[in-house]
Image 1 (spheres, rainbow, N blue to C red):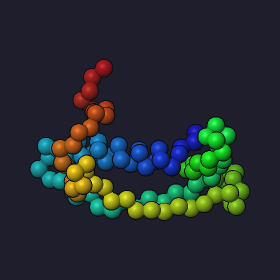
Image 2 (cartoon, rainbow, N blue to C red):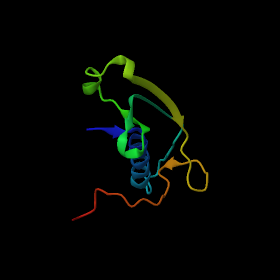
Image 3 (cartoon, rainbow, N blue to C red):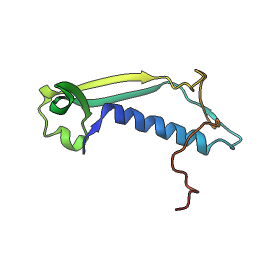
Image 4 (cartoon, rainbow, N blue to C red):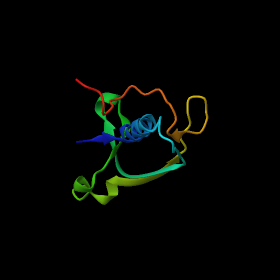
Length: 105
């Protein structure tokens, strides 16, 4: 299974929103500080994207089969902000329409 770098960052965003939603009515909240992310990635030209490069996150299982010359390590820090540019707390009330434990199908 291939995971794009943008998808990996999006997954972290969704998890933070879910954590904030779960903590909305809790008496204790946590300020979200800088998030450091580091990945091994493989750069590949995508034919369907007009020859543009796309970064794919390499899992530990697939890394062994890929030549070291084709993988790269990328690290960056994200500082979460709300839509109003305010700092975010896990426990803030945020708009989140994702799944919740108490949702019933």
